[in-house]
Amino acid sequence: MREKREFPLDGRRQKRDNAATEQEDEVMLRIWRHVRLFLTQSSGSTSPSAIDTLNYLESMSKEEAAKAAIKHALRALRKRHLLEEGAHAAALTALSRPFVAQGLEWKEKVERLEVELQQCYKAQSRLAEQLGTEVSQSRSLKGSIQEKDLAIENLERTLTETRDECSRLTTELEKKTKAVELLLSENVEIKGQLEEMTLKAKRAEAENKILIDRWMLQKMQDAERLNEANALYEDMMERLKAKGLESLARQQVDGVVRRCEEGAEHFSQSTFPSTCGNRIHAHEGGCSAILFECNSGKLLTGGQDRTVKLWDTNTGSLSRTLHGCLGSILDLAITHDNRSIIAASSSNNLYAWDTNSGRIHHTLTGHCEKVCAVDVSKTSNCHVVSAAYDRTIKVWDLQKGYCTNTIIFHSNCNALCFSMDGHTICSGHVDGNLRLWDIQTGKLIHEVAAHSLSVTSISMSGNGNMLLTSGRDNLHNLFDIRTLEVCSTLRAPGSRAASNWSRSCISPGDNYVAAGSVDGTVYVWSISKADVVGTLKEHTSSVLCCSWSSFGKPLCSADKTGVICTWM
Image (cartoon, rainbow, N blue to C red):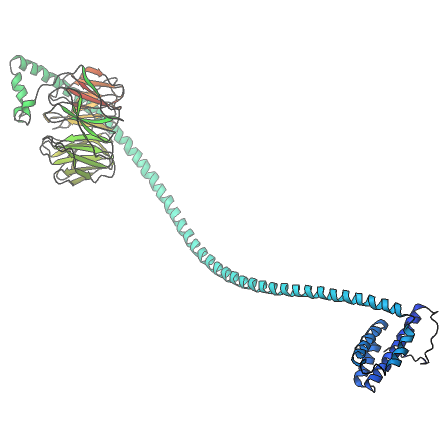
C-alpha cells in the first residue's frame, strides 16, 4: 500500500515552481484528503464500506485513484447536493480554491479522459462484436465438426463393409483363378487333342481326295465306254429308222408307253431353236426362276421384285401378276393340273397361289433360312418338296398346308426334283454330291459325287430314265437314274455357271440340253452327240435359268437384269 502523507490544513500551498511531477503529487494528495474527509463526513464515521473504498483507492495509481475518487465524489454529490448543499458550501469552496489555478488543465484532462473512455467503449463494443462473431463461428464450427464426426463414423462403417466385401471378393477371386487355371490346363490338353485330330483329318482328307480322283478317273473311263455304247446304240437306231421302225421306237421306251402318259396328245418332238422370238423385260432386279405350265405355252417367271408373272410366249404379253411374296423368288413349281403355283422365297417361306383366284391359299413356314429350291410330285398334286440353306429338305402336304417330313443333312441343298414315280427325291448339294432320298422314311438311298464344286441344277428327263445335273465346275452330267452311272458329260469352252442356282433344262424329246452362261450366251448341246450344236446370243448379262416348253418349243431363258428371251 502506498504511504500516506500528511500536509497542514491551513490551505497554504507552495508555489508551483517545482517540476510538474511534484505539482501532480501535491494535487493528488489534496484530492485524497478531501475525498477521505468527504467519505468520513458522509458516513458519520469510518464504516467498513468507507474503509474498503479507501483501501481500494490507495491500491490504485495516482491517475486511477484520482479518476475513481472523482467518480465516487460525483455520485455522492448527486445524492446529497439537494439536502446538504448549504452544509457543504464551505467545503466545496475550500475544495475549489486549490483547483482554481489548474481548473482549465483538469478540464482538459477530463475531456481527454472522456475521449479515451469513449474510445475504450468503442473498442469494447468492437471487441464485443468480434466476440459475438467468434462465438457464432465457434458454434457453426462445432456443428460442422459434429457433422464431420458423423460423416467419419459413416465412412468408417462403409470402410469396414468395403473391407469385408474386398476380403470376400478376394476369396472368390482366388477360387475363380484356380478354376481358370484348371480350364487353361484343360484347354491346353484339348488344343493338343485338336491338333492331333486336325492332322488326322488332313491325312484323311488327302487320302479321300486321292480316292475321289481315282474314282472320278474310273468314272470318266466308264463314261467314255458308255458314250461308245451310246454311239453304237445311235447307229442301231438309225438302222431301225431306215427299216421303218422309227414309230415303234418313239412309242415304247423301256416299257413306258408315251401315249398312256398324261398330256400325251400335246407331245411333239423338240427342235433346235435358232432365233429370238420375244425379248421381254419381266422383272426389276433380275429374274431367277422361269417355268412353263404343264401342257401349255404360258410361261411363269419369278424375280427379285417379289412377284410371279404369267406370260403368253406367242405374243410376249403379260397375262397375270401374283403378289404377296415377302422376299425374292428363287425357284418355282406348278402342279400338273395347273391349279397351284408354288414359289421358294428368300423370306424363309414357300407361297402357294391359286391360279383361278390369284390369291395365296397357303404360306408354308418351317425353314430357318432362305428357300432355294422347290418341286411338285409328278404323280400327286399334294406332295411338295423344298430345300433351304438351313441344311434341311422338307416334304409338304399342299392340301393340308403343313410339313410331313424333314430331312437334315450336313451340306446345303441347291437344287432338287422328284423322280417319275414320286417315291424318291433327287437333291444336288454344295459339296458337289447327288443324293437320293426315300420320301416316306427320309433315309438316304444313294449318294454319288456328281461335280467337283457345288451342284446348281437338277432336271429329270421326260421318260424318267436320265437325270441332268449342272455344277459350278461348268460341267453338265447326264446320269442313268437306274444305275447312277454317268451317261454323258457336256461341256463348252465358254460355258460358265453364273450362280449357285443356274438352272439348266432338257428338251421334251430328251434330245437337247440348254444352259446359260455368265457371258449372256445360251448353249445348246445334243445329247446323242455330246457336243454343242448351237449358241444363242441375245442377253447382255449373265443367264440364270432356262426352261423348255412341253410342246417342244419355245425355249426360254432369263438373265440377271430381268430380261426374258423366247427362242423359236
